[in-house]
Image 1 (tube, helix red, strand yellow):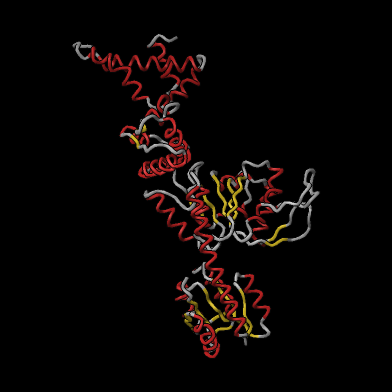
Image 2 (cartoon, one colour):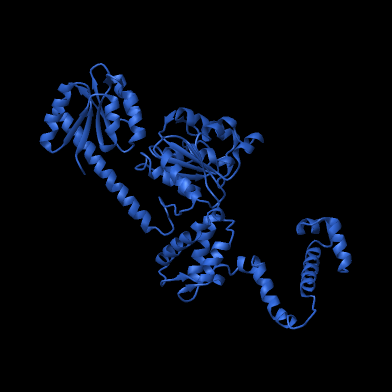
Amino acid sequence: MSKKLLVIDDDESVIWVIRKALESLGYYVDARTTVRAGIKVVDKYKLVLLDLMLPDGNGIDALKEIRVCSPDTLVIIVTAHGRMESAIDAMKEGAYDYLEKPFDIEELKIVVDKAFKDLAMREELLKLRQSKEEAMPFQRIGQIIGKSRGILKVFKEIGRVAPKDVTVLVSGDSGTGKELVAKAIHNNSRRKFGPFVAINSASIPKELMEAELFGWERGAFTGAVEKAEGKIGAADGGTLFLDEISELDIELQAKLLRFLQDREYSQLGSNRVIKADVRIIGATNRDLKEWVSRGLFREDLYYRFNVIEIKLPLLRERKEDILPLARHFLKESIKAFELPPKDFSNDAEKALTAYEWPGNVRELENCIKRASILSKGSLIEKKDLFANDYYNACSIKEFLESKLNGFLNKMTRVNNSNLYETIIAEVDKALLSIVLKETNGNQLKAAKILGINRNTLGKKMKEYKLI
């Protein structure tokens, strides 16, 4: 790692002392005397020594700005005697450490050395985490595949919002990849070295959700034989992903709102106030505005989450991404299940693109997993992809073609066969018979299923002698 650091201080004598102490140890020391000048170049440095009192601004405000524009940069506050309160405030805002003026040269060397060692450790930790994620089958952490306009818009929004330490709402249908987006935001933020904790509000009973979120003291309720930290405590210093936030109980929503406002909470069975530095990313497949109007979601919490919203497109709205995603899932399946090399046939590719994918990316992933295992030979055919559902239930056009082919070959040899009207009438009659049978002769229900007027159905039933 390059040992470059930036000093932002208007005292030339302080800059001289820092240079003299550190340059002999192999550090490169650059300096700026104003906040503005320092902010312009701060993204080029991993470590900054920042004075609290500068001619054009306050050091704490400068620290906040650095954390937004260069979240990976560590900041050491340099403060004069009598300004310890400000130093403490700076530490709360995320400063790495502080030094008192006039500082001890040896202390300066120790603090700077420790900072660079921590930076090196963070880089190693990040590489290790990425290598583990790549080795885990079907854990596409940090990867969102696609080139469609809709998904490129999502990429841009992630890039804009990730460095800003604000609450985010990710919305979209089930299976569109909301958690994947939340992980991408986390991995591209200053919190990427911290934990990423996920909790699904819909999968936990409402009476247990508060305990799961905030934790509990021993004896807080029946069965609480040991103290538990809770998801917020586990996510301290990182990101908490709250999936399906629309399912949160209304009373728990109030407690979550208080945490978002104050970053403080109490565990069940305790009055002790705990602080936690956690970024919240919420997700929903509901229309939260409608939920608010129905009294199911607090309006004030809705506005907390609605500051920044990332809406995910349906897979059928990004057709050009289907085949790249399918190939990605196939490659992962081959590796995970130790299969021989496989590819999709032309018919399989056409079928993948034509299908509507109501379950979105998750359905596609599961479909490819299944096909990769069940298919024989090196080519995955259409029947391997949709053997149980789509192929039999959804391909009406192909079903009719297969049934009519032999019949039509004979009929086209006969002149004046009135082929069109004959076929249409027979299909119409068969369809009406099936639907009426399924509805036990209920004409109103049958007409609704068929999408026609009840009077039209009555006329057709008389015409085809179905009454």
